[in-house]
Amino acid sequence: RPTFNFANNLLQSLARRADSPIPTIADMALSGLKETIENSPMNEHVKSCVSLLADVVKKKQERVNPQVLRVFLSLRITSEMLSGPAKKRKLKQGEVDDEEERDLEASMMEGAAGAQKGETKRLAMIVLDSILTSYFRVLKFDPPASDLLPPVLEGLSRFAHLVNIDFFSDLLQAIKALLVYQTADADGERALS
Image (tube, rainbow, N blue to C red; front, side, top):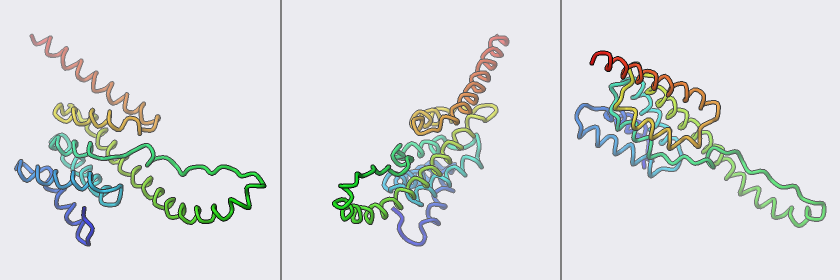
């Protein structure tokens, strides 16, 4: 887990090498990025890893190594990370005096935890957005990059429960376009036979 001043420089260096044409270099870089993502809580380093890999997907497009997309699968984003703060229950008049002291202590502890939860939620939303943008980018390649589809579809199935319902209509349209392309391609092959 990078915890020193040059962490971002190291992550940028690993991300540049993640799509190296030399398999050993690419494997080592991807392994380092995957380990950072797996062993870190949701923090700025995880966000940097994901956004740097999303940039690699954007720049390389259909030439990107499918293993770059597989690194996203090591993320641990839960629905609790994306949910808002818990609601407090209302107290009756008689409970107020007894609860006041406990509430003061609890609110001091919750204040720190609430700030942490808010930051985790913000980072998790940014990370999820970067991942889904990368997946959409791959789904919209024309012609589709068949070697990139397995990690993308696996990732979509992994993160589907976290996706906003509005996103699903766009996702279904992208998959429908992909199926239409595959059907047209198969019909073209039959016509040549």
